[in-house]
Length: 145
Image 1 (cartoon, rainbow, N blue to C red):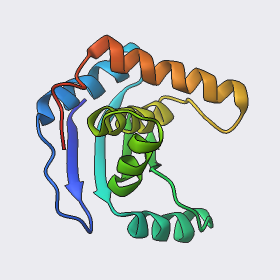
Image 2: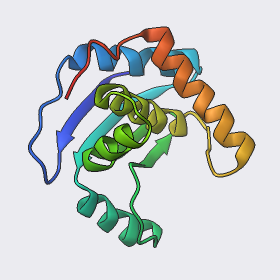
Image 3: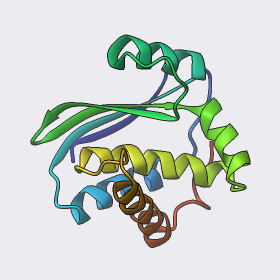
């Protein structure tokens, strides 16, 4: 993988320990045998992501992550993450914010590897993969926002 980048859209925030997160993403794509070239993670607010969701997907709903594959082989993509949604979901799921953020980062990458979460069985598979990568690479204690 040539490049993993992190950007802020309409919020000001700072991702700490980017190198550990980049390593996690690179190892995930290697393990899934998917060639990836460039992944841009864009962190934003709920309002910003609802606007993207409405404009491009015609959904007027809150979500924590939207993945836009720009090419498939090698993968080039943009992954938009609402930090407000991540914070709220961490409370709902009674987990640390840092862990939930990494789960969503992984979730976006897994979409690019062909995983879906629209149906029951697919949701279970996606959740198991998220947990596997969170546990296998064990970076949740190293990465904070």
